[in-house]
Length: 455
Figure (cartoon, helix red, strand yellow):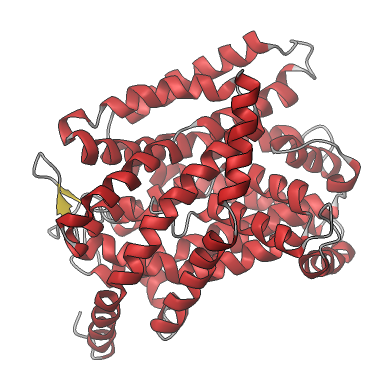
């Protein structure tokens, strides 16, 4: 029975990620980019200056500094999607899927600019009177109370989408394949269960501290984990520079020929690329606006500019490096592994003995930082639906679900998360399209003041 339910989840996931959702995410991103007159791309330099803290004001409303808000958002995006998600994309769609991840991410830059600007522009108050941001709040504050059922639907899907199933599963798989099996400790349901329990205990200790502790922890962990991972992957990529150009040629060739997908379907490659890009940077899904909506700022456009850096960092840069490591080592052809195990094989081929252990350390940071960030989103979603005083209960559910994820099937987990992400995207992008004129007007005013140096 459980196997039948799992297959049903996979079928629903494959069905919902069709043409309408692609049009919504890619078409929506393209519309935002043109409607803003390419503002997100033209002001990347200014966004970086904001991130340095130049414009921080502790007296402004909100809970997190710009840097902490981006770090919290990146903790939920720069993670397993960049390591395991890329491997899944190549396994399912071949190297060509990476090209469509790039396209989706570039359009996602403008989507995040709009959604996260709205998250500050239309902040609301929860039932306890605390200022909150996110799609559920800008839907009700910007479109009116009649749209509350849509906001509730988003929140319910959000609680599933930010569950720790994937992170717990892949971290457990990594520990099993790299640490337990090679050292003759054995691997079984019981060992996965024990690993899941240990992960849940560590996560529980951190997340009960709340968003301020999460912001503090991720603010320190995210830069460190990115640096370690980037240095290692760059070593793999430049260990044989003659393979770099051919790797890019492989990506571009397969992106348009469909050779790497069974049946030779170009549409299948595009779908895989967009699905995995959404899993990587979450542009248009609505999670990042919940973090950026907590930023200490009274300038919505400023936070939107900071937020748009997310897809550039996690998909354009980090996902590309992971993909190159897998393609250059040729493990995507020679290995039957999937998910995190495929990436581990690439590290092991390029850096014998030590590579897989370096990846294990990096993956632990990636997964744990994501596990620290996601409960914040879940508590906000539950708080919106049931009342702020009940929001904390999500933390306890989250900790239990970690254990479930550790012992569950990877493909079923991916299917379930993809379903919830798809159902989060519809209310997020549609409401953002309807409210986009507010962002355009605010952006025009902001950039005029910036040009006149009135900050």
